[in-house]
View 1 (cartoon, helix red, strand yellow):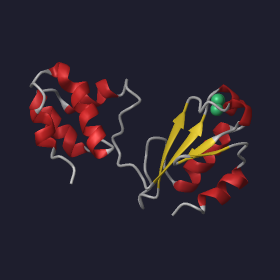
View 2 (cartoon, rainbow, N blue to C red; view 1 turned 90 degrees about the horizontal axis):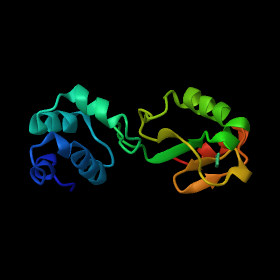
View 3 (cartoon, rainbow, N blue to C red; view 1 turned 180 degrees about the vertical axis):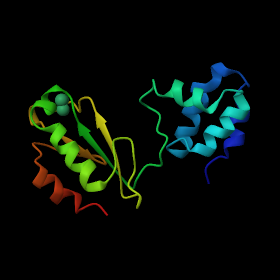
Length: 149
Ligand code: FES
């Protein structure tokens, strides 16, 4: 059982400067920060929910949607971008019916874009969970997705 939000909050002073450490602790415990968590943080630290979303949008590390069973990361670093990364991302957004930062309604996949996965020579690259798929094409990627339920 994850630690209740209330007891995570209780470890922090009720100061606005605690916002980032609080968000980090909640994300570590739950994998994301739910709308209910944001409400509780807002009450505890006396910061509006809008401010919380606003501040945290500067930090790529925070997610506000529940992760899917599998995470899809499309590399849009320079090398991958010029070799078709954006086309792969568009295909995924279209076929899964979600945008970057979202999770499919069946919780099968969540989708993110990343800046560089460190294997530019093999671009374009897509990562599914821990697996790196190199020299991806729309067709190959469509096939690989079938292996993840
Ligand atoms: S740009 Fe994609 S792996 Fe480096």
